[in-house]
Picture 1 (cartoon, rainbow, N blue to C red):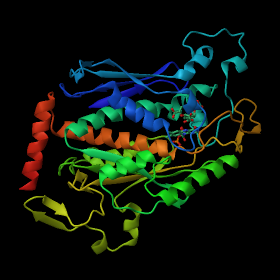
Picture 2 (cartoon, rainbow, N blue to C red; picture 1 turned 90 degrees about the horizontal axis):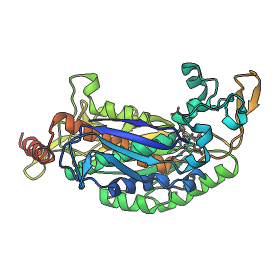
Picture 3 (tube, rainbow, N blue to C red; picture 1 turned 120 degrees about the horizontal axis):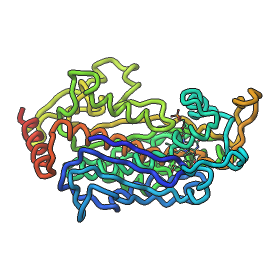
Picture 4 (cartoon, helix red, strand yellow; picture 1 turned 30 degrees about the vertical axis):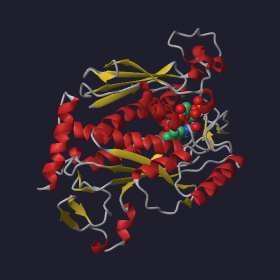
Length: 389
Ligand SMILES: Cc1cc2nc3c(=O)[nH]c(=O)nc-3n(C[C@H](O)[C@H](O)[C@H](O)COP(=O)(O)O)c2cc1C
Ligand SMILES: C=C(O[C@@H]1CC(C(=O)O)=C[C@@H](OP(=O)(O)O)[C@H]1O)C(=O)O
């Protein structure tokens, strides 16, 4: 299964085309819209989120609520487009129009794709870079992820996400079921399970905003119900943990990823890292602990997948950073109109979508099927086989 996305931040719409879904899977626009709404929320979001009300239109590949096996195209309109039709339209704009009307940008923002993207594509108007490098694109990544999540739910695989750190404030660890993680994170304005930390995180976001600054954080994604032995050890590009790591770091502003105890493994002896193997007739094989976060040798162990990603602080700051104008080569202080001050809660939903996509694709690679009923059967039989192996 694969997908592409298209669309600029202030263009008319965002589009994704998903190829390789089996036929006969139930899919409704509301399955996708729930996740699109979740991605728009979160304390710290800027004014753009008051303009947009993201809704997916299923433009192909689904008939009477069921997938056809043909490409599924999803479209999300940008409400903000109506303010940008002249600036972002595809028709040529007259040479007499001023750079102001074109909203030309010659001052690259530190921490953004602006300067490198300008150098790479030869754009002297850096708007041509930022329109596509903007995290507005994560809207349709979440739409594609919602489709993957629907497939996973029908295969008995559950996924949830929550925020574990914002601006240095850490949530206390809790032992909760995946349903409780979903409910509690959904009810929190920062998607955090710990109410004490939640309040402090909100204060930290408010004070960063008041100081013209921004803060980042850490999100965690949990997956339960994956059969053992998905992915492979035989080649670097078939390792499922590696694919998930790439998907997480590909999210705008994500700088790192870890599984299970992650970087903590560097500080512990092997006897306190590796998860001992056990078997009983109800569960089949299991690990007595899950320090490795559900992966050994690039394959699922059947234990929950625990993956965390770290998001840097938002780079556009009201407190301006220094940069250089590419026309005059003179230094300047960046000025801005609007921005998020913290998007970690929204990014948790994006990370969940990214992980859902990778594991759904891995299941389809391994249990190839053009039909939903046959896929369900193949995965049930893998679970039974692995249990008594
Ligand atoms: C959900 C989400 C919302 C974001 N909102 C903003 C924003 O309002 N302002 C901003 O400067 N960066 C924002 N970013 C981050 C930038 O898109 C990102 O830092 C930039 O494109 C450079 O990419 P890199 O940080 O991955 O190198 C957001 C990221 C995500 C995931
Ligand atoms: C539009 C979204 O996020 C945007 C991501 C973003 C950036 O630079 O990445 C900059 C802001 O856009 P604008 O410049 O239009 O205010 C955010 O609002 C979204 O998440 O849907």
